[in-house]
Amino acid sequence: MKSLREMTTSRPLRTSRTVVRRSWMSAVRQRNAPGSARSHVSCSTPASACCSAVVSISNNVAEGFERGTTQELLTFIYISRGSAGETRSMFYLLERLPDFVNFKSEISDLKTRAESISRQLRAWADSLQNTEIRGTRYLTDKSRRTEKQRSEREEFLAELQQIRNRKS
Image 1 (cartoon, rainbow, N blue to C red):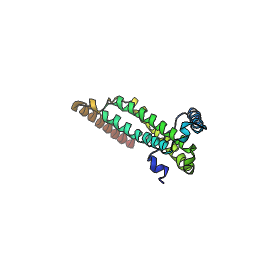
Image 2 (spheres, rainbow, N blue to C red; image 1 turned 30 degrees about the horizontal axis):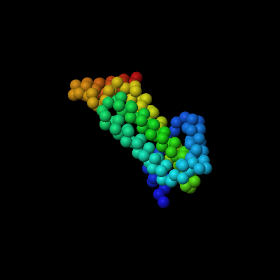
Image 3 (cartoon, rainbow, N blue to C red; image 1 turned 180 degrees about the vertical axis):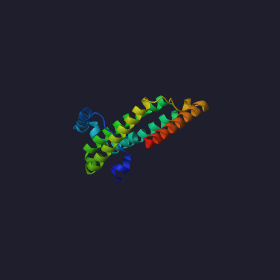
Image 4 (spheres, one colour; image 1 turned 60 degrees about the vertical axis):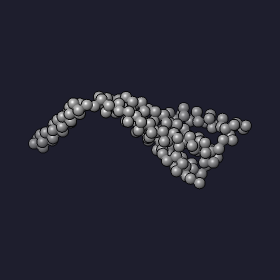
């Protein structure tokens, strides 16, 4: 039997714990209710959904990046965060299913990693929201030259400041 890590190959994310846990507990109670159609669903279904959500995280980042604009990248980063939340949610479900009892510590580790991914995506989104760069789609030869000159000027001024500091 494959380990849970092999089945998912990624890490989950964290959101508002109280809301997520309440929602999960309701979903778990419903899934395990006697006579519930879901109580007869194979565990491969939640594992497959978890795998899809995990893959969706990186795929959305890649798609957003390839679109060539900062705004579209931001949109896809937020979609990735949603997939990360879905992944984390699936791990909460999996750890409550009888077939995954032996994977509790592994699932806990994956949930922690998913939370980290969510925080990283949030930080990236914050930095992009505060940039003047519109994206590679809008770069021209002139804008690239201007940016290179600006960067070289900043480097020169930093070196000059270091020289001044040494003399003081």
